[in-house]
Length: 215
Ligand SMILES: [Zn+2]
Image (cartoon, rainbow, N blue to C red):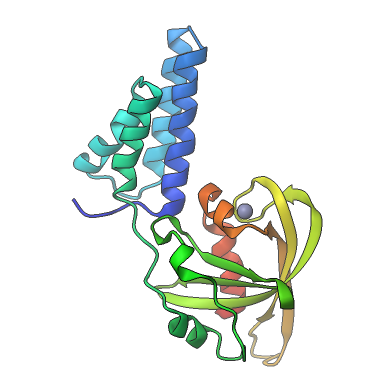
Protein backbone atom coordinates (compact mmCIF):
# COMPACT_ATOMS: atom_id res chain seq x y z
CA UNK A 1 0.00 0.00 0.00
CA UNK A 2 1.31 3.42 -0.94
CA UNK A 3 1.44 6.45 1.29
CA UNK A 4 -1.90 8.27 1.08
CA UNK A 5 -2.22 10.55 4.11
CA UNK A 6 -1.38 14.24 4.03
CA UNK A 7 0.11 15.83 7.14
CA UNK A 8 -3.04 17.81 7.99
CA UNK A 9 -5.14 14.67 7.56
CA UNK A 10 -2.86 12.81 9.96
CA UNK A 11 -3.26 15.62 12.50
CA UNK A 12 -7.04 15.38 12.13
CA UNK A 13 -6.97 11.58 12.51
CA UNK A 14 -4.89 11.96 15.65
CA UNK A 15 -7.19 14.58 17.14
CA UNK A 16 -10.39 12.63 16.46
CA UNK A 17 -9.05 9.29 17.66
CA UNK A 18 -7.49 10.81 20.79
CA UNK A 19 -10.98 12.05 21.63
CA UNK A 20 -12.30 8.50 21.21
CA UNK A 21 -9.56 7.05 23.45
CA UNK A 22 -10.24 9.71 26.07
CA UNK A 23 -13.94 8.84 25.95
CA UNK A 24 -13.20 5.14 26.62
CA UNK A 25 -11.27 6.17 29.71
CA UNK A 26 -13.67 8.74 31.11
CA UNK A 27 -17.20 7.78 30.09
CA UNK A 28 -19.04 4.69 31.26
CA UNK A 29 -22.17 5.03 29.15
CA UNK A 30 -21.80 2.71 26.13
CA UNK A 31 -24.24 4.68 24.03
CA UNK A 32 -22.20 7.83 24.51
CA UNK A 33 -19.01 5.97 23.62
CA UNK A 34 -20.61 4.57 20.47
CA UNK A 35 -21.85 8.03 19.47
CA UNK A 36 -18.42 9.62 19.94
CA UNK A 37 -16.77 6.76 18.03
CA UNK A 38 -19.27 6.98 15.18
CA UNK A 39 -18.83 10.75 14.91
CA UNK A 40 -15.03 10.45 14.86
CA UNK A 41 -15.12 7.70 12.24
CA UNK A 42 -17.40 9.82 10.07
CA UNK A 43 -15.09 12.83 10.34
CA UNK A 44 -12.02 10.76 9.48
CA UNK A 45 -13.71 9.11 6.49
CA UNK A 46 -14.74 12.53 5.23
CA UNK A 47 -11.09 13.59 5.13
CA UNK A 48 -10.57 11.36 2.11
CA UNK A 49 -12.48 11.60 -1.17
CA UNK A 50 -11.91 7.87 -1.59
CA UNK A 51 -10.80 5.44 1.08
CA UNK A 52 -9.93 1.93 -0.06
CA UNK A 53 -10.70 -0.98 2.24
CA UNK A 54 -7.03 -1.65 3.08
CA UNK A 55 -6.56 2.03 3.91
CA UNK A 56 -9.52 1.96 6.28
CA UNK A 57 -8.17 -1.24 7.87
CA UNK A 58 -5.00 0.67 8.71
CA UNK A 59 -6.95 3.46 10.44
CA UNK A 60 -9.59 1.33 12.14
CA UNK A 61 -7.48 0.15 15.13
CA UNK A 62 -7.21 3.76 16.32
CA UNK A 63 -10.92 3.74 17.08
CA UNK A 64 -10.81 0.58 19.22
CA UNK A 65 -10.20 0.71 22.93
CA UNK A 66 -6.42 0.74 23.41
CA UNK A 67 -3.88 1.14 26.15
CA UNK A 68 -1.72 4.22 25.77
CA UNK A 69 1.14 2.13 24.38
CA UNK A 70 -1.11 0.22 21.99
CA UNK A 71 -2.59 3.46 20.72
CA UNK A 72 0.86 4.98 20.15
CA UNK A 73 1.88 1.84 18.22
CA UNK A 74 -1.23 2.00 16.03
CA UNK A 75 -0.59 5.69 15.44
CA UNK A 76 3.01 5.00 14.39
CA UNK A 77 1.75 2.43 11.90
CA UNK A 78 -0.52 5.10 10.41
CA UNK A 79 2.26 7.71 10.44
CA UNK A 80 4.29 5.47 8.11
CA UNK A 81 1.71 6.24 5.41
CA UNK A 82 1.97 10.02 5.63
CA UNK A 83 3.16 11.64 2.42
CA UNK A 84 6.42 13.51 3.01
CA UNK A 85 6.97 17.13 2.02
CA UNK A 86 8.76 17.48 -1.35
CA UNK A 87 12.56 17.41 -1.14
CA UNK A 88 14.02 20.87 -0.88
CA UNK A 89 17.61 22.05 -0.82
CA UNK A 90 19.04 25.40 0.13
CA UNK A 91 19.72 26.12 -3.55
CA UNK A 92 16.17 25.11 -4.40
CA UNK A 93 14.79 27.44 -1.74
CA UNK A 94 16.78 30.35 -3.12
CA UNK A 95 15.22 29.77 -6.53
CA UNK A 96 11.77 30.06 -4.94
CA UNK A 97 12.68 33.53 -3.65
CA UNK A 98 14.54 35.12 -6.58
CA UNK A 99 13.91 38.65 -5.29
CA UNK A 100 15.40 37.99 -1.86
CA UNK A 101 19.09 38.82 -2.16
CA UNK A 102 20.41 37.12 0.97
CA UNK A 103 17.92 34.47 1.86
CA UNK A 104 18.55 33.05 5.28
CA UNK A 105 17.43 29.49 4.72
CA UNK A 106 16.29 27.38 7.66
CA UNK A 107 18.47 24.60 9.01
CA UNK A 108 17.06 21.91 6.73
CA UNK A 109 18.72 19.04 8.59
CA UNK A 110 16.63 19.94 11.64
CA UNK A 111 13.32 19.94 9.75
CA UNK A 112 11.05 16.90 10.00
CA UNK A 113 9.89 16.66 6.39
CA UNK A 114 7.78 13.63 7.21
CA UNK A 115 5.30 15.79 9.12
CA UNK A 116 4.98 18.99 7.19
CA UNK A 117 2.13 20.78 5.47
CA UNK A 118 4.18 23.87 4.77
CA UNK A 119 7.78 24.82 5.42
CA UNK A 120 7.83 28.05 7.38
CA UNK A 121 10.65 29.94 9.02
CA UNK A 122 11.25 33.33 10.49
CA UNK A 123 14.23 35.51 9.71
CA UNK A 124 14.26 37.47 12.92
CA UNK A 125 16.73 40.01 11.61
CA UNK A 126 14.43 41.19 8.87
CA UNK A 127 11.11 40.30 10.55
CA UNK A 128 10.17 38.14 7.63
CA UNK A 129 8.20 34.93 7.57
CA UNK A 130 8.97 32.66 4.64
CA UNK A 131 6.49 30.00 3.60
CA UNK A 132 7.10 27.23 1.09
CA UNK A 133 4.08 25.22 0.07
CA UNK A 134 2.98 22.90 -2.71
CA UNK A 135 0.20 24.83 -4.39
CA UNK A 136 -1.50 23.65 -7.60
CA UNK A 137 1.10 20.88 -7.96
CA UNK A 138 4.14 23.14 -7.76
CA UNK A 139 6.28 24.42 -4.91
CA UNK A 140 5.83 28.12 -4.30
CA UNK A 141 7.53 30.52 -1.94
CA UNK A 142 5.86 33.41 -0.16
CA UNK A 143 7.75 36.14 1.59
CA UNK A 144 5.65 37.86 4.22
CA UNK A 145 6.19 40.53 6.80
CA UNK A 146 5.87 39.30 10.34
CA UNK A 147 4.84 41.71 13.04
CA UNK A 148 5.10 40.00 16.41
CA UNK A 149 2.20 40.63 18.75
CA UNK A 150 3.99 39.29 21.81
CA UNK A 151 0.76 37.64 22.85
CA UNK A 152 -1.40 34.64 22.18
CA UNK A 153 -4.18 34.54 19.68
CA UNK A 154 -5.91 32.21 17.24
CA UNK A 155 -3.78 31.12 14.29
CA UNK A 156 -5.52 31.35 10.91
CA UNK A 157 -3.80 28.23 9.65
CA UNK A 158 -4.22 25.77 12.51
CA UNK A 159 -7.05 27.49 14.46
CA UNK A 160 -5.19 26.92 17.72
CA UNK A 161 -4.51 29.37 20.49
CA UNK A 162 -0.80 30.07 20.34
CA UNK A 163 1.78 32.81 20.10
CA UNK A 164 0.89 34.57 16.88
CA UNK A 165 2.22 37.36 14.72
CA UNK A 166 0.49 39.50 12.13
CA UNK A 167 1.56 38.16 8.76
CA UNK A 168 1.12 40.35 5.71
CA UNK A 169 2.15 39.72 2.14
CA UNK A 170 1.69 41.64 -1.05
CA UNK A 171 -0.73 40.16 -3.48
CA UNK A 172 -1.13 41.02 -7.10
CA UNK A 173 -4.87 41.18 -7.47
CA UNK A 174 -5.31 40.65 -11.15
CA UNK A 175 -8.03 42.34 -13.05
CA UNK A 176 -8.24 43.47 -16.64
CA UNK A 177 -9.20 46.98 -15.67
CA UNK A 178 -6.50 47.33 -13.04
CA UNK A 179 -3.48 45.29 -14.13
CA UNK A 180 -1.01 46.88 -11.72
CA UNK A 181 -3.11 46.83 -8.60
CA UNK A 182 -1.39 45.39 -5.58
CA UNK A 183 -2.91 44.76 -2.21
CA UNK A 184 -1.64 43.36 1.02
CA UNK A 185 -3.31 40.34 2.53
CA UNK A 186 -2.68 39.34 6.06
CA UNK A 187 -3.77 37.64 9.19
CA UNK A 188 -2.54 36.19 12.44
CA UNK A 189 -0.45 33.06 12.23
CA UNK A 190 1.67 30.93 14.53
CA UNK A 191 5.20 32.25 15.00
CA UNK A 192 6.31 28.65 15.57
CA UNK A 193 5.74 26.95 12.21
CA UNK A 194 6.84 23.55 13.52
CA UNK A 195 4.11 23.60 16.18
CA UNK A 196 1.61 24.90 13.60
CA UNK A 197 2.39 21.96 11.33
CA UNK A 198 1.56 19.56 14.14
CA UNK A 199 -1.82 21.22 14.67
CA UNK A 200 -3.09 22.12 11.23
CA UNK A 201 -6.07 19.99 10.17
CA UNK A 202 -7.52 22.05 7.34
CA UNK A 203 -5.86 23.55 4.27
CA UNK A 204 -8.57 26.01 3.28
CA UNK A 205 -7.07 29.15 4.81
CA UNK A 206 -3.51 28.31 3.72
CA UNK A 207 -4.69 27.59 0.18
CA UNK A 208 -6.60 30.87 0.01
CA UNK A 209 -3.73 32.90 1.47
CA UNK A 210 -1.13 31.41 -0.86
CA UNK A 211 -3.49 31.57 -3.81
CA UNK A 212 -4.15 35.28 -3.31
CA UNK A 213 -0.44 35.95 -3.46
CA UNK A 214 0.87 33.68 -6.17
CA UNK A 215 -2.04 33.05 -8.54
ZN1 LIG B 1 -0.84 27.79 13.55
